[in-house]
Image (cartoon, rainbow over all chains, first blue to last red; front, side):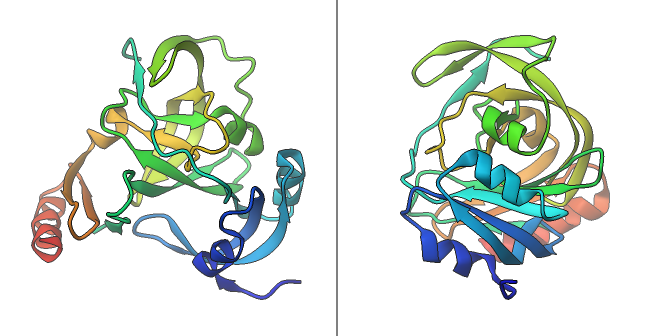
Length: 80
Length: 148
């Protein structure tokens, strides 16, 4: 089993690779719902594999760390 | 009293959001802060990851993106927490975001309009307080002074 680490440190190790990083979240900043520490469950380029790995934990994050697109604009044409 | 730091050198503000399913499993996600988006939405692939079925949705809405206009499903998320405030049974868009969009969803006007907001772009600080109590208003003023 992987040790508990700061989530930012885990993500930094894989930044720029076209993979999904799957992390069990162990502590959270309650004020903003921001995950602080966690345990690495796996690293995979396959989304389905990432989904399977995520099933191991009660609180989890799946983060794409590859190349990033920077712009998104979304507008819904009617109110709900 | 949420003050959320962001990287001011980037052209996006990303904020943490937690989504909890009916069975209690929680997924920690990252959303783009987008006041120009009328409605909050999650990526379709992320919805699949967290086990929310969007393919059988019976409601749809037309959505304009930077490159296209598409019809997207509307689904209900059992619980979504942003800036420390939980929202139950929230209707969200199931957006066809590509994998290389650096977020799991878009935080739009429908949720942002529930908060007082202050952004210091120079320092990279976002202050958000819910608009429900005098106590939150005082907290907002205090947070703005600290983030100035």
